[in-house]
Every structure is written in structure tokens, then in C-alpha cells.
Image (cartoon, rainbow, N blue to C red; front, side):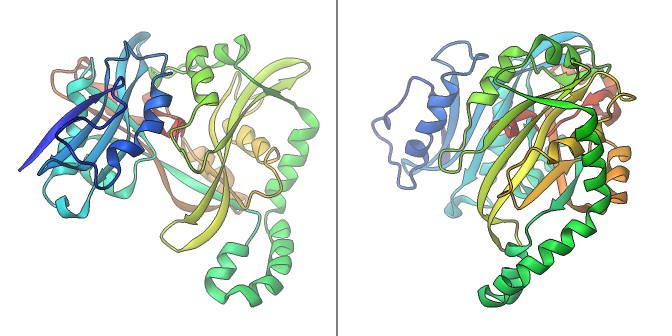
Length: 363
């Protein structure tokens, strides 16, 4: 029989009568420290982790935390989630579904938003009739070493990599030309925190629905991560034209010991996770992401751009970036949620979508 234990932010030590053979409780202490700094929490008595229990052993877990949505100008508190896992002895018993759907019990609006859900998590969310918005992931490849090593081994790869990397510069000549022109036109300023102008760009966005990215959100996200061992580097840039802010973006660089199911190893991946423009005619979403490519360190092997609409995908496809999988934003709510009364909430065109939504901004 599977039971469930609700853990509050105050609880650091394993409770009496329970065992932690897989380190599920103990390993969440890092996330606990990060979530104690969550500006949206009510108190340290908030429940942040639900653990599945079998024979007094912790065998599954999910972590959740509050964030805010802006729906037709009104602010709603929702939850996001992180770290869903179930040990092999309990797979197929519906534990993952119960942990996922059970998060709604702790949400003030009986709703949940997730970013970058895994394939396993997506399959659960689809069964729960969640809204899933997909964003085609376009890849700009700089260093082919990991791909070549996967196919040819180390010796041949060391010989081929310089040749292939040289050819990649020619292959991406169209986007590189765009980047050169954009760098000549706009000035980039690295920021430690969001300026009033950056917040104004988000506030003035005309989409009906969005995750609320205000100063509070920027300060928390830029300075925190839920990843203990492979902490990403996040950087905020202000885009200026004639000394006036016209846009912004946040980049993230993360090292993967193993990237994708294809077995690529030791990959340093760059991502553009948040951006905005004051005027699409001045600088478009696509141009902002192209300009952002220029800011990544030379040791970044590849850069991913999640396209929020067809025009972005078309822009990058024409410049030879390849569509490799999809990013996603997932929204789930119950019938008694105030969000369920809004018919258009299931339509992608009404949402301000970015990769840095839900837990993805912290993981």
C-alpha cells in the first residue's frame, strides 16, 4: 500500500518512523534551501515536498512552489513543480500521476504550470488532460566534437572536429551575417537586475495570459537554481538603440554529462530562456535571439532557441538551424479553478510563452 507524506519547509531531518533508502528526502535539502528564499511563499510552514511511502520507505517524490500568473490583468497565485521521480519498485502503480495531480491540492487556484517537462512527465500530464504548448527547439551548432565522438570514437573525432567546425561557420553564414549586422546596430549591456525599462517591456506586452515576470521574479531567478551539481550560468542583457532600451534577453549556459537519448556526452549547451522587445519593427523576437547567440562563451558547443510562433521557426529554418525536439509549457487546473472559467486559456495565441516559465527558470 502506498501512502503519502507532506513535508514542510521547516523540516530538515528525516521524520521518525520513516526510512530514506534512496536518498529522496535527504537530496531535497538543497531544493529546500532555495525554496526558503522563494519570495512568493507564505511561510516556512508551506508544504514543498510530497513523498510516496511504501513499508515506511520513501519511494517517490515531487517538489512544488508558488509563483504568479497574470490573467486578463489580474494576479493569481499558482504552483510550479520540480523533481518528479518514482523508484522502480513502484512504477506502473499510478504513483507518478497521483504525485502530479496531488500538487493541485496545495495550489490556491487549483492550478499548476510547468516548463520543460520530460517525456515521462508529459505522458502523465496528457492523461490528466493538461494544456501542453510546444515550442519547436532550433539548434545552432558550434562544436561537433560530441556528435562525431558518438559516431567515430575519440581518435578519428580529434582529426575531424577542426574540419567540421570550420564547415559549420560556412553552413551558418546567413545567421552569422545577421548577427554581425545586429551587433553593429544595437548595444548590449549586461545587467545584475532588471531595470524599469525591462519590466515595462513585459508589462506592456499585449497577450492576455502570462507568467508574472516582475522585479521579484527576476531577482529570484537570476540568483537561484534548483540544480545542485550542474549549476547553470544565467545572464541578463539590456538591448539599447541610441541609448534607449528596446529589448532584453536572459541566456543560460549549462553543462550536460550526457545530452539527449542519442548518447552525446560532455555538452555545454546555451539557451535563450526569456526575452522581450518594445517594438517588433525595431527588433523582432527572432532578431533578439539571433543577437543573443553572440553573447555565449566560445566553449559553448550548441545554442538552443525555442520558437514561440511560426514566424520564429521560419526565420531560423531559413538560416539553417535545425529543429531538434520541442520545448514545452504545461498548464493543469481543476474544474473548480477560476482559470477553468476562461475559455480562451487553452489557446496558445493568447499566452506570452517563454522557456523560462514554471520550474524551467530554476532548473
